[in-house]
Image 1 (cartoon, rainbow, N blue to C red):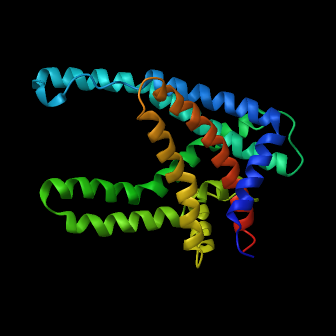
Image 2: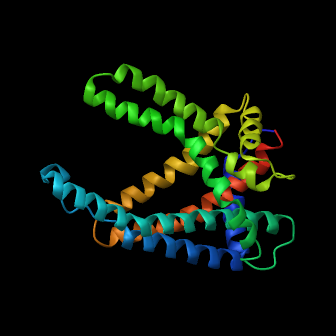
Length: 245
């Protein structure tokens, strides 16, 4: 049965409208995380290339300390994403009681979940680094194959997070990656379209709003919170349909 993306998008919107307790709490927490990131993200006020070695060392230490709150808030954001998926699963099974009923489970799965996404993103990150280094050193001929390979692997594994959180019995990290890879055979076109809708489209929208300047910078974080909630619901609905083909 082919996946009907318009139907999945409509179902996701209906889910958000109908599950008001889940939506209000989830959206409120996502907005809080986004606004905290906006507030605590260090603003680069100095060009590091103009600093002496002693000043550069001090600047590096200060930048590291300033980044610690961002790392903590980002970890909270990942925890919230896990909680959202577990809650959607409970709602789908008719077992939802309150938003924080899976908080213990979410804490227990956060480190493997982070490791999973590092493994998913690592090949594409290597390709990105090779592209930057290639442009600087004239070795861009190597960068393109690495970048294409990294994107291919990311698309193959793009549903690994849902596999890890939704499948029963729960799979280990490498079992999750192997299962996701096997399941993706012959379905790359569908997965690529899913990635465009779930990753590229929200990023473009928030970037366009953020480039307005002024209030647009704050508004982009609010929009990002809503899109994050919507994409999480959409991803769950997509995974349900994907498992049936």
